[in-house]
Image 1: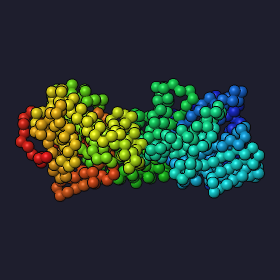
Image 2: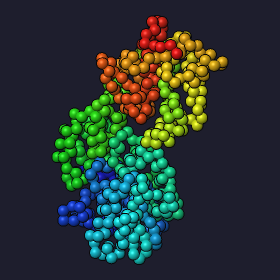
Image 3: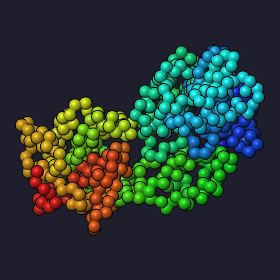
Image 4: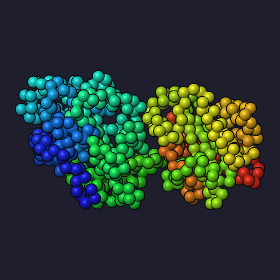
Length: 543
């Protein structure tokens, strides 16, 4: 790719590829001056991709050898137009009668972006107009003789239930990653392929404008592992136009000479001059616009949401991630304290453990969170993200109230049994709404004392812990487990100036969840007391 060579393998069956290319190259792109055909205006990577798709079909056995294709490509590289051309070609070549081809889009607007080019390709060719009937109001193109059809479905307004499509194209997969029902929707849409050996599915996408989540992250990670040889899957082909990791780390994507790497259509549908101008305009912005520009136009994955009102520690957070478990933390440290925050039915309950490494004296942070199932309903916009954290093992979704409190107490007892928990001021909590946790910890069999459970003052009084945490992170004196969940919480945290102090509160951060981070600040408040020295109590309130 760096050498400008194709990253798409040659077709398995060249004869089938040539037949499809012969049709595809004659289709016209009507929104370009002169209405050129694909053969006249498309770059070679487009032909290679089309050849790989249709050249995966074994005409003798009637089987498609590659069943799943993925294309990750930067914005404005004619993705939707290519999608339309591929599906029209598939419709023309289909040998089944009354077969439905499907383009599945996340929204009506995206659906229109795919249907309109397909319909225009038909209208621009008299022979195709005689052969096909276009119904704009239901976004359907139907073959007049064998009744084969191409239907474009918008997931936000239409239904995919009952579909029996053999060939399916999913546009803008990154948007489906934000939908909690995407997996079920795909299972329904792809169900018809069980009886169609010639079927395939193509996923087209740009990078997400937020940290990848849900089905998009799942697919992207899988394609990368297949590409890198970590997984052997001969039926999956992911074409990923993204910078090698070494170039991401060195920020080589900022050099306009490297724009071609994720923009194979550079000089045609993508202007290098425009990209360079936009890079300059957005580079100084601190509201997340620069990260979004890099994601959409250069396929640089967003790791954290870095806004202008972000917490200062966010800039250094990811660099301090390590392979750290609670068990390894307890083995390495000479003392450990605990912070707890949240716990409402539509909230997260966050637990953070901070220990002091007995050799380096660095602080080590490990965190976990719990969520009630009702959160997935009331906060459907983050449901897929929470499910990702559950898969990572950093979040537990509970069905019954009280299960989370019990599990929190179990972990706290584990820390106490290690001998690292101080006899006083060892568990820092937000004084509001933690009655159930106090009851559980002080119950017979748990036997924690009220001297161990400390209410940590919130608001501006937490400013010292917030600033200490950011200094520790920036100075490489605090390491954490590197979980996606905590990176997400850190990215959600918004700072509000308050006189000479700063505030990070759940009210300021809105619906975004930051409870495990707030739990970490509570634990930092206790570490500031230096548990070995029995420091004077400052900044705490009685429960």
